[in-house]
Image: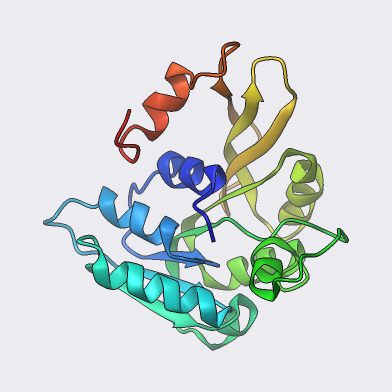
Length: 222
């Protein structure tokens, strides 16, 4: 699986403040877990669990973790999020996810790609329910979704007691409509959302300064 802009945005945008324990849901090749691991100061203990249902992706993530100098404190688990949420005795200060998002759409012959991109294996409702079981009462849940899923997701989250505190709307270019939304949710009631807009490319097709500022810790050419 290729490294996508969605994960780069989410890993760059997510704040680790007060996050002593982190869970990466659907880690794939491990990009989000590795991005967050880089944010920890060397003197601070790292506790990042990364779960993934697909065995091929697990093999890739395992190799990436083993070869990375930021592998300290990473734990990889081959299990579905739904099952893990019932079995785990751990609670997390931060849960992060770039979840599957294609609903009722044409599928690829590649089964691993289908698991990563289609929500059959983890619906939004199951994602929220599982997050509620594992998130500490003062914890935060960060994720990226297609912009057209925003209302449906927020409504279901609200029914389960999760409130959106912060969001980033993402446009491919200045003239396009938003294509993605990054959200931070918690159990703490909040009705005034800190909302910002990010444009990835300018009118000349170059990365905007805002995009560079957000992701510069991870792109060598920025």
